[in-house]
Image (tube, rainbow, N blue to C red; front, side, top):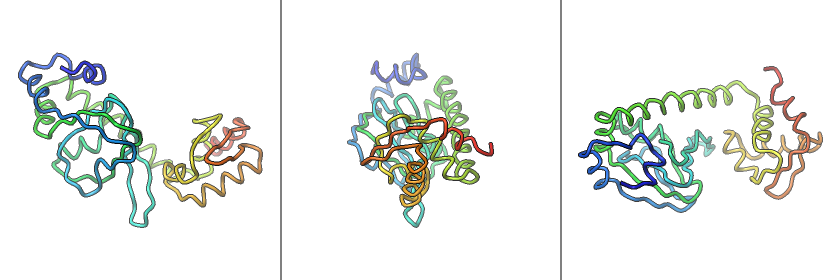
Length: 218
């Protein structure tokens, strides 16, 4: 069996021989360059990608074109939306794109269901994923619904300080906002001496001030 696969997904170690053989036979290699669309809202869900390298960005797009990043799928992680769709035989409610070049193995739905039903370590890993991702998504909902954007932006900058390479549009997408609002807030931060702005570059100058803003009213 693929040693890299076992290293990334230890729950697939020590499979019964029949399942191990099916995994070897049915798992298909997948390579996707950065920017590739891997799945889209409304599309049928037919396989689970096991990411070996790279990052898959999962996002939700509104009718007005605004988009919010839900989470990223890194090597060794599973996509909760794909898992949910496979279990429920439903279509995708979100979009997945290759944030970087991605290398993965894909498990067709029947094999995924067999692994979940017949191999307890894999089933436990799937349920643990649900608990972890649900907590993260609830936190995201709380931030978007109840926390002001200036505080969220301050926290976002702090988490990536001191030097951040990102466009205002990319930051807006991650925060579920629009570029114009993010740009205006960043200019305010610059005027207050908290950051220095460059071309797709932000330097954090006063992390304590940003921290005070991020923690305000908490």
